[in-house]
Image (cartoon, rainbow, N blue to C red; front, side):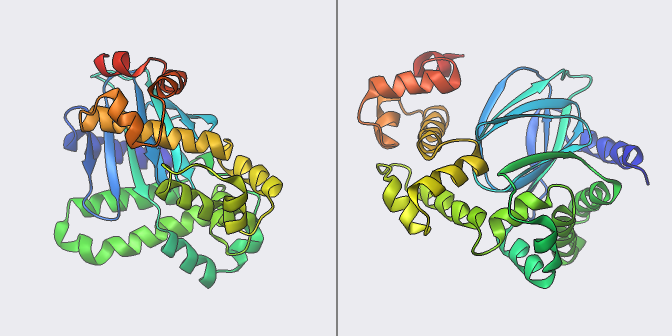
Length: 292
């Protein structure tokens, strides 16, 4: 089938499953489908390594420090953990935004690269942390088959690992494979930055010491800074600030913390500095942001 026909089938199935705005898990592999009926509403999140495919509509995403447009039948790969802001455009109740997403498994990617070393030489190591491309029929069909498994629970446990592995392989073989290969090939600069990103995620409350972090991944401070910005489009300090601010935003929205407590909880010593940096990223100071 062509992309348009596969898209039509998947769209019909998703609309039946999702009668209103929401996030719906498929029940395996970190896969889920998403519907949005409103436009121009900023959604802040922190992407794990993932692939997301737009089935209907379009959105702007700021992933790390890079702004990208994701239209219908296009997919985005985030190769490392990245701060993200998403803005759906042109959605309505009659024609909602629809997407399907899947968490990427680093172990599966490493196994596939080990089994298929030609992918490493083909892709090289110059990829970034995020990329966007038109989807091809084979990859979209794999997502359709993955979705169908969520409708057949008795088969999903046995067959979903096969389809999930196929999707990972097709991503590595496709035009965005260089981004995944770059951060999952041991010994190259992308893999070293991926290790640093994982450390920052786990220790975002601690003061950032560039010399110690670059030494941990066996790079000079200058080289570390250059490669970190190539992968994330952010400096290490900017990345850490977003980690802190996104977690503070979650604490206030989900756990009902006040702004001062959230600031201290994520590592800020000055609530006023927190408020300034929060406004710079989210557009409003914390109190007004929570009321909107």
